Amino acid sequence: MVKFVRTMTALAAIAAATTPSGAEDAAAKGRVLAQRLCATCHMGPGQGEKRAQGEIPGFYAVARRPGQTVDAIMDWLRSVPPMMPNHHLSQDEMQELAEFIMSLKDEPQ
Ligand code: HEC
Image (cartoon, rainbow, N blue to C red; front, side):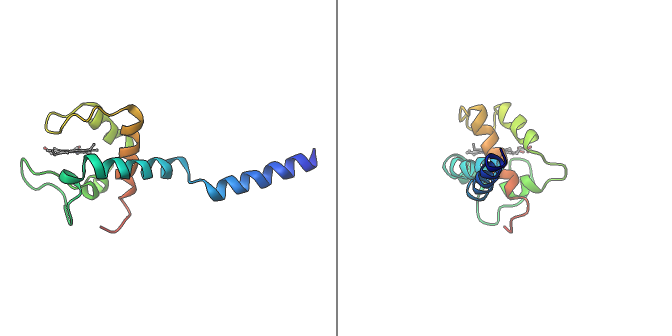
């Protein structure tokens, strides 16, 4: 039993060291999706918060909004906003995109 526990502890340590956490993994997938689907509108160099009607906020600015959450971003995507192309995103894709956007919060722009 002791040996089994030791083996499991060692395996858990290896798993923790080699696989990214769930959120990081989702964010990495979301980055690939965002570069393909959203970058032309939301990932321009230096793109900040929208300052006027009809402007598009950059993802860095979206992530830095006070109180912003993964859930709030998912709600937005789930609403299929009429000002954006309908990308027919799956639930998982919405989550990955939202995790990616939030991962930009503390990243220098
Ligand atoms: C053709 C341009 C275009 C594309 C492509 C696009 N968006 Fe948008 N996005 C917009 C516009 C326009 C708005 C709304 C700006 C406004 O009126 O506040 C917006 C707003 C947003 C917001 C902010 C919502 C809020 O609370 O203000 C998020 C988050 C967002 N888009 C995510 C995405 C994601 C994720 C993708 C890719 C799957 C994407 N967008 C692709 C144009 C686009």
